[in-house]
Image 1 (cartoon, one colour):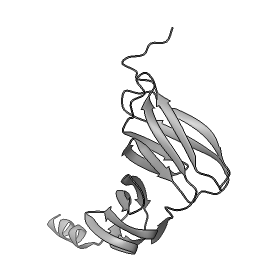
Image 2: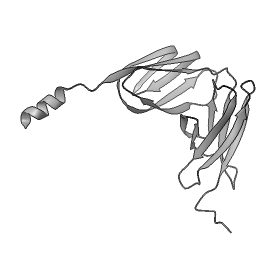
Image 3: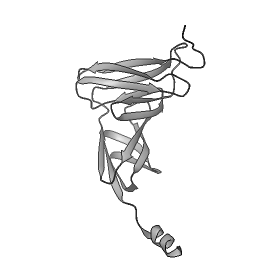
Image 4: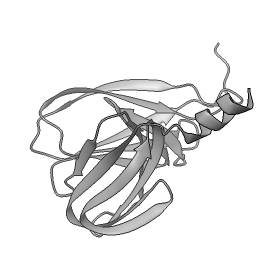
Length: 164
């Protein structure tokens, strides 16, 4: 049994590489590494879910996103100048901005009160906003691909709201 344990410890898990491209100089934190530039590489990453944080020079908030790394290399791009959808999470009673998880398509920004989503083609998009003790809300918006859209999503607090 001891031999099996030793062999398992020497087996390498498959890893892959992540390339992050931005249209302007940005600071990116991923998997414990912080790098800056416009084209950044993170190497030898085991498969799994990871938080990536991006602070672009021309955006006013830190972008936090969950990404999944599989057993093949991945490349993601951010164009901070493209028409974008900005989603703001608010408490439906007080109007106070909330730090929530905001998802559009398969891109999730976590723990933010405002999220920017760029590089989107024209079409309909489902936006889901979720936060503990609040009812999750999904809205559909139509993006023309040319103009910025600002969308406020108000959540109802389960602790302070009763139906009827």
